[in-house]
Image (cartoon, rainbow, N blue to C red; front, side, top):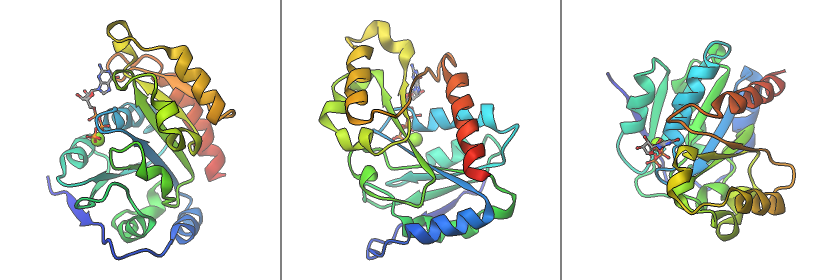
Length: 218
Ligand SMILES: Nc1nc2c(ncn2[C@@H]2O[C@H](COP(=O)(O)OP(=O)(O)OP(=O)(O)O)[C@@H](O)[C@H]2O)c(=O)[nH]1
Ligand SMILES: [Mg+2]
């Protein structure tokens, strides 16, 4: 299968997030920025959510990685339009790259465009890519101190997903600590504990996103 790979141009520094937002608003496409550490479960979560949401919404995915096209291939294998963005070293995606990639999608026939940001708990939170809302993922094996250590990623998000909860028996991980720390930096933000492996909790998260997407598209 042929995957389109585009590269991020680093001389770009103009913030075009408002233009991306306006284009997608006009086309009635909801852009969701998915962020979290390398290996936290971003691609796995997208696969879980695609299974839950594809019956109602037409979905596309932009896969951000430093290099390679492994994740775009995984999404394309689900018969979902996927474009790979390689940043060639940069630790985040910029709005200009999203603007550049949009013509690759049939926006008139799309409802939801997920962007899997570069695996990184710091930089992606600093860049508005024109998204309607953000999902941050933290996984159990990363440790329960991450909200305190990397607060911006948890402050500037609309929703926290705690993934790999099937691993809770094997790690000294306090759900209460994460809940309290998250509440401290993001009092209104919902938290969804899930497992991509067992599917536990994914239905509740999908219900929340379904409502949010409908309201963004209305
Ligand atoms: N046990 C368990 N493993 C999971 C879960 N979600 C993802 N994984 C595993 O975690 C590993 C990384 O998952 P990915 O979905 O590739 O993570 P990612 O955040 O997309 O990784 P990058 O794109 O490299 O940053 C894979 O081996 C997944 O099978 C989960 O809920 N439970
Ligand atoms: Mg991935």
